[in-house]
Image (cartoon, rainbow, N blue to C red; front, side):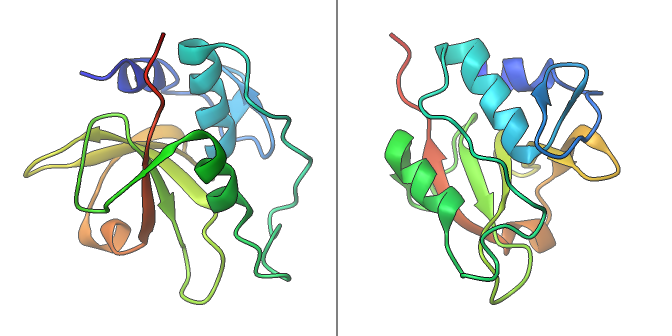
Length: 143
């Protein structure tokens, strides 16, 4: 099992709090990824500016996608691995701005994410979720 998945599962029960990234106290989907990064790799690679719930939408700016490309390795969507970062487009025609971490692969795939109203949970990667994935990334190798 991937260390990223093990660490992310340690965040289960952390409540959803917009812009937060504190284990046990609160995080959003980006905050979960940031927190896992800190636990696995150390210092975050760049500061995250404040953002609103509708950030990037008015300009159609794929900020999360560009940030992922700066620090992670893009992968084909079908090349599933434990611990991959998944980028979701929640509605057609909008920017991609939900993140999750692939936990299980195979016939019953799952992903871990911070979801409004639920906190950090592991969800089945069902067809409605799968069709929203627009990018997949691998984390760097640990040194």
